[in-house]
Image (cartoon, rainbow, N blue to C red; front, side):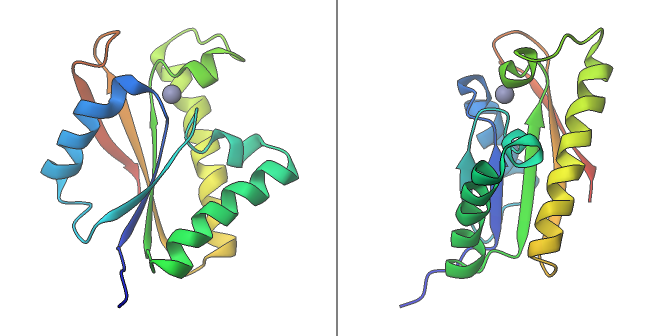
Length: 143
Ligand SMILES: [Zn+2]
């Protein structure tokens, strides 16, 4: 019996995202057909700037979704006020943070497209409206 799902969500592990992210997933219909999840601090950050070993591990996780579950779309989801980025960067504004993270998201997309040319890759952004993530504005920034 085969079990397939259409999407792979790459998201940050941040607990503040959970409730609003699940609402967005249900409301947006983007994830119809089911989705796998890779949940890591900084979402695709370690794919964009990690060592060879970390990249290999990351891509191995993606392969489980694309090869075993036949996922045909990857959604790379990053968010504002991300601790994984705050550790290494000081951002003058939310816009600066988005520029830096978007750069990593695009880099990650290119790495994924090279390895999985037939997989669609979307880049999504969550803008936390408060410190606790009680309200988050979601948008597809590219794809
Ligand atoms: Zn984060």
